[in-house]
Image (cartoon, rainbow, N blue to C red):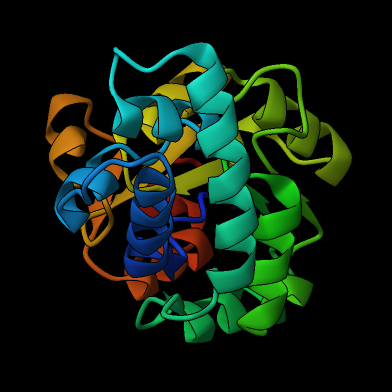
Length: 223
């Protein structure tokens, strides 16, 4: 593969606790009780505004959502690396791909400034030639705009581009952009991959690196 585009939360980093704590801090600020961490994780994937709308409920006004969103983003910016870590095998896999001169990027619906800070804080920011977030384009994933831009910037072939993610949002993004998709089963929403299957499933990031670096004949293509 020429280009590998990674999702962030649930794919490269385990940020469940920091997101859940920040969501519940925002709910507490709004006078609401905390939610179970697993429920918060199930709401992640479509960007911070959608996340806060979901955790406040349909009865919340738009003004309440905006107020809670501002609090959430400020709190999360202060606590985004309290518990967040790279998943096992991610560091070594990224190192392998960089050594093989594979172009790598991150496309997430998380705000881009926070995404950069997390990747830099965990020591892998320099592995990626570009990081795009949910506020980088007019449209978030599953719109293909981000993938199209990255393909153009990398000078990559669309048929040799791979999106790696943990949810159906990522699969839909890949399908909309006409690129292949690898789904990791250890992320936030692995159950959604059963409803919208990716091209292949990986239990570990090392399996993704193996696929990317395999000869083209091993991927069912002619050399």
